[in-house]
Amino acid sequence: MSLPPPIDQTSAWRALAAHASATRTRQLRDLFAADDKRFETFSFRCGNMLLDLSRQRMDGETLDLLLDLARTADVEAWRDRMLTGEPINTTENRAALHTALRLPANASLLLGNTDIAALVHDELKRMGEIIAALRDGTWRGITEKQFKSVVAMGIGGSDLGPRMALEALTADKLPDIDIHFVSNVDGADIARALQKCDAETTLFVVASKTFTTQETMANAETARAWLQEKLGPGIIDWPRHFMGLSANTTVPGKFGIRPEQVLQFWDWVGGRYSLWSAIGFPIALGIGMDKFRLMLDGAHAMDHHFRTAPLNENLPVLMALAGIWNVNFLNFPALAVLPYDQGLSKLAPYLQQADMESNGKGVDRWGRPLGFQTGPIVFGEPGTNGQHAFYQLLHQGPQTIPADFIVPLQSRYPQGKHHEMLLANAFAQAEALMRGKTRAEAEAELRADGADDAKVAALAAHKVFSGNRPSTTLLLPQVDPYHLGMLIALYEHKIFVQGIVWGVNSFDQWGVELGKQLAKPILEELIDPSLQHAHDSATAGMIALARSQPRS
Ligand code: F6P
Image 1 (cartoon, protein in one colour):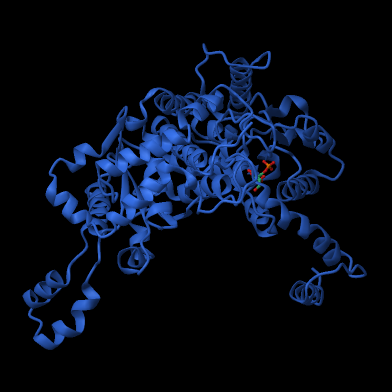
Image 2 (image 1 turned 180 degrees about the vertical axis):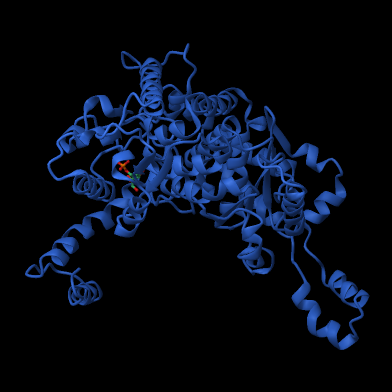
């Protein structure tokens, strides 16, 4: 079978490169001035979610060329391969079927001979039963007290999604059970969570696709030891206080977790795409099963749109293409994620894993080195906090950093004029990045404020904003379970489309392995000072310094 050419060697890519150099000096201000329908032309809808690309540095021709690129990369065929369960994760020989986790109950999807939609719904039912038992007190702790705290232990995809979603949906949070998250192997993380818990009323949820991840297993062991110490070293019924969430159904048992207290998912769900599965248990416990199902419905609505909308109206496709235009043709290597919603404060860390672990690759799916940049450097903070931290660089730094503004039109916490103030800031920041302020405008402003010529000459340059800084705005009605589901699925599919265009496998993560491998011998040396493995002088020197510290 002959391989497709790397995407940067296609005529579609070359046409975009030529178009980029021909239009490099074009200003967004001028594009808006020349076309008062620009917002309508470059806004796209899925249900009541609106994606506005009018502040991207593109015109109709750019979009057409980008759509050609998507067709050249065969995006639609790859999308269908993913959705029907072909093993598109070729380096691990697996399907990537997170979309099956949000299929409606009457759907069916065969993977081999197994209807995985039925498996998914059986497990959702079990999840609902466990949650009901915890909430109505049918399942209690050893001393027959009802659980009041849950400590969810996991890392990466087994942590970031539930943590992000529960924070986003605080308005939906049910009372009576506090949920704490522990991820870091830094003992401070579990120690601080345990300080808030009473052993008699605490349930530990060990979330790990593999059930072998060092950090999670260390935290689970510490939690088990703490429980045994608090409830009496002789307790044999400690497993009553433990649940497992895993795709590896044998290892939780080895740890001591009872099979009926393990919720399962499957190897065709990537860790960073797993919040819709058993890994979402803390979300469902926190907001209730019905609202968790609404989140799945929202994601499914976006899946349906992604599967059926033509490319030129398809939100994930369009968002992906705008990102590719910025990264590869305008050479802007980063992406600021700026949600104007305090609940979405964990969205940027969530998307860092979703995007950077998926597309931060150096070779294509056939192992050929890539000659262009892939995934952007993702960072962000909710507005307005970020405005008082790093926006200075976004507005006046010499580098251009495209931004995604994510703006719910209604607040879940209406308080006086707070939401209007929040919206005003969101819209103003996007406008400021786009239009900037010219030298003439800066001088005129200074003069209007009474500055003399000397002051104008001294200050004007500092008050200039180059503008022409691209952003995307996503408007959603509010951050409720349904629209959060849509939003996350939108980003998942955006990342997928970008991976397809770049030709990478977005579903493996070999890049996390080397550090893990090297940590093993170092840990041995830190624990047993008689051991000495070969290292470079920096690593050896640091190991020696660490060993010289008093042991606690
Ligand atoms: O960071 C590497 C990684 O494998 C992620 O992809 C994954 O989400 C995380 O570790 C946790 O893995 P597990 O769920 O198996 O504990």
